[in-house]
Amino acid sequence: MKTIVNHILPAILCPFCSFAVEGKPANIKTLCIADGVQMDFVWIEPGSYSMGTPDSENSRGKDEGPQRKVILESGYYLGKYEVTQKQFETVMGYNPSTFQQQENHSDLPVETVSWLECQEFLRRLNLARNGLFRFPTEAEWEYACRAGTNTAFWWGNTTENWKAYDYAWVNSRSFAMTHSVGSKTPNAWGLHDMSGNVWEWCSDWYAPYSADAVENPKGPSHGYEKVFRGGSFYDFAVSARSGNRHRHEIDRGYPAIGLRVVWEPDVANNDNARVFYLEGNVPLEMVPIPAGQFLMGSPEKQEDSQKDEHPQQEVTISKPFYIGRFEVTQAQWSAVMGFNPSTFTQSVSSGLHPVEGVSWSDAMNFIEVLNEQLSGTFNLPTEAEWEYACRAGSNSRFPWGNDPHFKDLLKHAWFNSRAEGRTHPVGQKQPNKWGLHDMHGNVWEWCSDAFSTYTDSVEAGPSTKASTAPRIIRGGSWFNEPEALRSANRHRHPVDSRQTNLGFRVLWRPD
Image 1 (cartoon, rainbow, N blue to C red):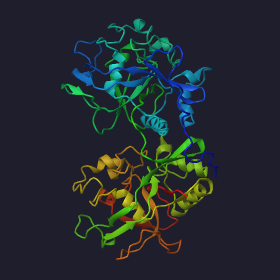
Image 2: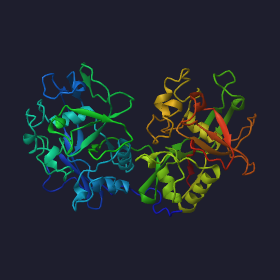
Image 3: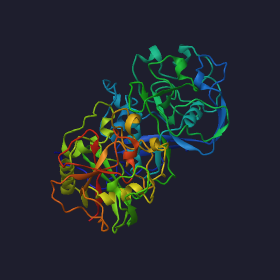
Image 4: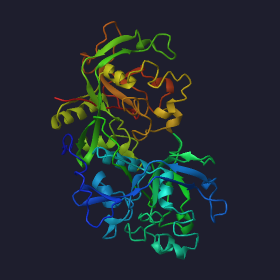
């Protein structure tokens, strides 16, 4: 097993450099993310524009219209350049890019990154609590790309390839590879490579446009593919038009797709979470849970209620604790234990999937290593602590309500046919009110308790039964029908059981 080299609360980012950078315009801010590694951001004023393309535009796609008026009420800082390989590797600890052969590859845009990997990149930036880093919305991206124009490209209407070569790395003139960011002429707002080099992921799920004017659009609340914009080195110039849009699945990376970052310095991004950094700068994020009381179990007449879920009991959680924001991931397990027991390792983003194929005993070994090398005390949550954290103050079948026909469950959980027969990266479904993701579905989660029936004296502490007794698992999984994902549902497995739908999350208490 590996040694954990970073302890609690070191910053991923060094303190931000002074914004008074000699020779930089007032609308550009420079942030330092590590010694000698910086990111430049350009201030984009709020405003309005016509989003999409007119019917008359050459090579227009059907999904680029109808045009509609979009109003962006707030300004934002947008990356002056696409995120580079060096910047990505500084934060993530690895470089997934295809084009690493050139001597100057650190200045090339990062690519072959899935939307999910980019999301993790942003999350790690955000752990430093220095404002909010995020994807641009599709509307923000097009507004910044157009830079006040309404032509096919920000430099004009001609779609001839030769004209585009002055402004963008596209098609044959790119020599089938990416190039250093900023080596082409910027648009009127000072943004480089908004056309060509690599496509850029946006935050929006893909959906057709409506004709209605809209303020601050963010796209639909869920979907199957994410939007990316801007064209790439691989594509003909027509793909680099300002209104052109495309989409892909979120867990797949391509050599022609990268990202650009929005930064909101005034957005508070501190929810009192505590962060540990494992080997390779892999974060383990713990969310505070307050002390309190709740009704554990389900009413006997509640739909889908099981005999072992009642009688309902009032349980007191006398001390606050911290619990993992996410299920323990394959990357976190590998950083601590030095190997990966999981079955679902084929995806490029598999490190972000929950670890599975681990027994209760395996999980306790992982926790033993954490306790040897990090401050405070880690453990599996007790069954009572797990259900208390899952309910987040609710007493219905799910934290969001009884959901009798499971219409809202898909927003919160990976389950049964909707999970496509596998786990998915943690944190892609909506969290509960206490900020915890995947408390329902994805993988079952081990608890510290041995299984026992409920009585009038339910305890919040761990069971004292022999270590070989079957242990509680909670939350349901990608394999299960929706009723198994209810907050009160409970199941048990032998301590040496290893399943492809069985993982865990950790609890932590400070010294």
